[in-house]
Length: 340
Ligand code: P6P
Image (tube, rainbow, N blue to C red; front, side, top):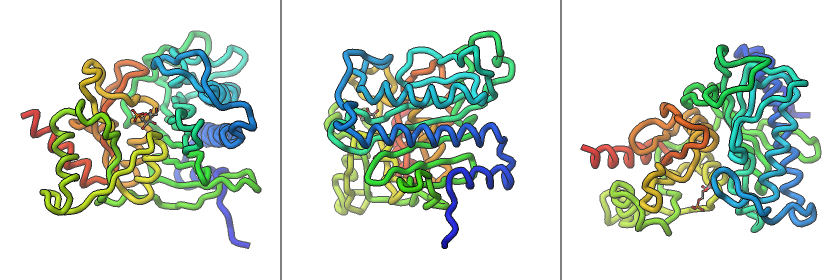
């Protein structure tokens, strides 16, 4: 019988070979288990009475789906008791989630988008859970005092782990702990995530881009220039024909790019000039940027590495250009040219 490496076995081997702290290993195991629980609810769909929207809005002003709230609760309940976390933060919660006083606090912080792309769940399109793990600054960790939001405000380079689960034709968990990207496929008969992609790499070159073209009139000049050049195909300066995909589920678009290359773009636009973009830095852009960079790709906001941005607030937004290095460098160059 061929040897299978489950997520648990992989994490044990990480502890042996890369000195991964046992509490970080335990935290990631629990996150994986929570994603399996979310997967179970997502895949039930109408049979589980979990489709549709609630009458509530989240801090982003977005109408919450039943599954948004359920997924958030699953992650909170799975992680609050383990003694690995000093606190949690989520797209679905205005403020920091404090670990209940009956449980000990731990050294890490968990930030997540519990169900990214949830507007797709009612139409049976892939959605996912995105998560990021940071160390809690020792001076801000107290068993008796509430955790302050500033503990989370660390640049993405400080992440000790990042990943996402994608609930699609296959349910997969993509994970990086700073030494490459691994892919695990859920074996529903085993109930375990099994290592199926040992060394995930983003092709440096691509002929595929992902952007919501309906916003074209709102884009800034560098984005208009870049997309126009791609649309010119072999007749244009880029000398090749490009294909376009836009699933409107970041996890699904990023997973495709991790698998076959491409560039994902959610630029800032004129609709909300005060906001630097739609996507959130702490629990969408940072974890996805760590994964993409660990897989040999690049991720910028048009001007700098996303992972080097110093967050000013928990739910701040950022423009995102990530994927195949050659294309991300090209559009970043266009932004920098325009700035001069
Ligand atoms: P639009 C989902 O709401 C999300 O945050 C990302 O998953 C996705 O890439 C983006 O927004 C889609 O935005 O404006 O095209 O609906």
